[in-house]
Length: 369
Image (cartoon, rainbow, N blue to C red):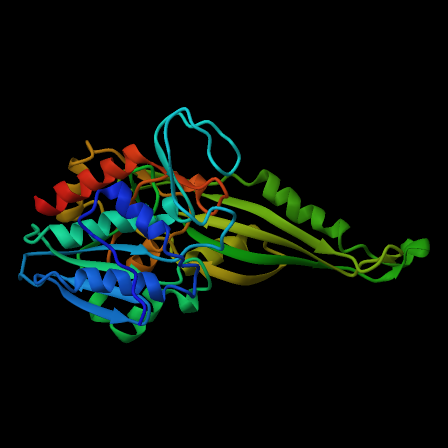
């Protein structure tokens, strides 16, 4: 079996570059998983498992609490950015020539999220006596459908590996803590009419025109601001697509507005659906997707210790991430990783060197106690 050689004791920037240079587009993580498994198998204080293209490494010191440190090892497809390149301040990015104002590491996955994976890999291979028991999880297929997500696969076959007091995902968050996440619901709100020739439109009823009432409700809607664990989560209910009509000379008899509801982590999936039904009372509502959010869990001792090490600065997570998978299993989770999430999946993907070092320092300080 071909295995990538990784040195988990290398400088954090060099290790991130090595990880970037191992191709691992979703579904093709075997090589990078083999490299991580081989590197951590050398650590006598870790119990290491390989499960498909996931690697799980655990300490077992019977500490009072256990934490999970996790990150996905896959990337989106290549966009002329397959190889890592260190770009110094004042130099241009290879992708579009943008001049950098600080030293950055450019390359596919550098931000989302091989910088975070490098931090976790170095911690697992370096910290022999952490203040908590730690489960490090390096998992596959985060960037594609949920059924193939490594955390989903682990939960189905080895749920005991996901048991912990809290979880920290090293997803890009500018090396700051973003707690919990919003839930996300998608629905189709439909109207009907009567089909007719557009030359004799009075014989029909236009379903697209009937969407006006739905759009008016969206325009008048005031999204809630919900406080959870002292953090303000801003909700949103928005139209994201409109469909209707089959030809340029036919009055349409069906039309649909697709809406996306981003809701607070304290709201259940059932409560979110009920709210959308109430907003669009009188219309046909069909739910196509609903993933509840994640509670911040800021009252957990291990998380309070981590927060203290970043000066008490915590922001709510806007958007849905895999922290919600942990929350669904009763494990509160936060995001803490190097990189700007706005650069994820872009041709210009890079991670600032300063954030790699800041995140490494924070995680190492927290785990060592």
